Amino acid sequence: RAKTEGRGRYVLFESKMGKVEHERNQIENDLRAALDTGTGLSLVYQSICDEKGRVTGAEALCRWDHPEHGALSPEIFIRVAEERGLIDRLGQWVLETACRFAVGTNLGKIAVNVSPMQLRHPGFVPMVLETLRTTGLAPTRLELELTERVLLDKTVGIREKIGQLRAAGITIALDDFATGDSSLQYLRDYRVDSIKIDRSFVARLGQDEESDHLVQAIFGLARAMGVAVTVEGVETEMQHDRLAAMGCRTFQGYLLHRPMDSEQFASTMSEGHIAIS
Ligand code: C2E
Ligand code: MG
Ligand code: MG
Ligand code: MG
Image: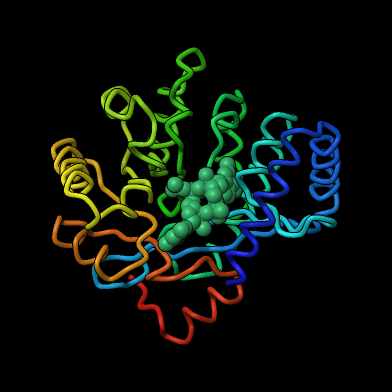
């Protein structure tokens, strides 16, 4: 219920923000201050589980407790960060924080979302490798989640950068798969390790035949291409069972765990509620 109220607030603020330029400016300034002082920003972690419900990894999700507006959706403040040139700093903070968290746990992989604009930055690959060195996280324990939007830009060597990251042992997941209009083209043009089927597809499982067929077809395609599949937004047993029957091995969603702060996540793990891979 708290979640729903929170969402309502985000929407209200977002619609206001669309109209009022100075609010964007305010967000920009406040975000800059948050990055300077390290206050208000945090990460939560959501489990990624195998077919038996064992945790094999976690996705880091950014949270910002805005001094006036309270919890702001990352979809809002990430966009402002992208528009106002703050995404590289924010992205680096997220990566470093997530790696430092993962290093202290026996969690498998830590997945970190990367904005398209970060990947365009010439210093992106060196920054990632340097962050792994300074935090001591093994490259094979890092997964970067790229949205399809990333790959639209052919001019800045995205393919080469993905190749360099994978050569270092980092795995690459294509996030929000099948929500864009060129998903198949991306699968052909870029080598990635896995795709994450967007939760909008999962939400419609069992509601219409087409959705089941579509998801089934994505599994077939991924198998043929040697790409792993994660399914996000699994909320019900019905969805879980349907996906398992389709051959799904990797699940993420509220049914398994909601995103938790680092202490909750660690204590859930140590209480043995989570069987580590
Ligand atoms: P995403 O990467 O696709 O992350 C999944 C979103 O789905 C998260 O929302 C997560 O809390 C939510 N979710 C997970 N399981 C369920 C479920 O069972 N049901 C429902 N309804 N939702 C579920 P969140 O945390 O609000 O993040 C939204 C988006 O913001 C992310 O989508 C990602 O694109 C972006 N984002 C979040 N953190 C970062 C970050 O550190 N960097 C970048 N570049 N983007 C981020
Ligand atoms: Mg993601
Ligand atoms: Mg996703
Ligand atoms: Mg998504």
